[in-house]
Length: 152
Image (cartoon, rainbow, N blue to C red):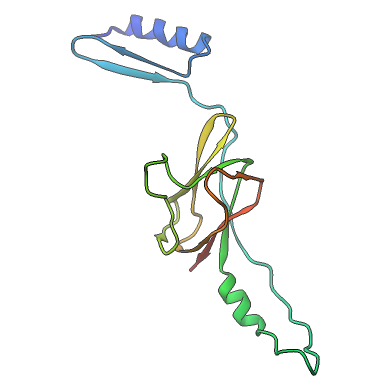
């Protein structure tokens, strides 16, 4: 069994080094120590699409789609809370967190954005169905860039 004094020494070594993780084991126990990422707090905001206004159609122009239909189809978006690299799944071999057609609930993880070597799980702010994934896996995303379209 690893005693507390020894464990505290290893924690100090980890904090003072450039290592990100350390694993200790003996005959009976295995303990993994990891540094916490010092990334800014991440929150997501689901924002309704801005209202669309239709101009008066010209006599020879096709009729415009009614405004109510456009805004109903637009739904809400899940936007990037930080700048970083978008990952749809936890690993290349895993299924995406939120593929098109999946129902998500508030708090469900929908993707990961890597920023400064820290993996930040991005969560849905509202319940709904993923209608469209707006970015590709591995793509650099900007702050407040729409990532997903969600229909309530």
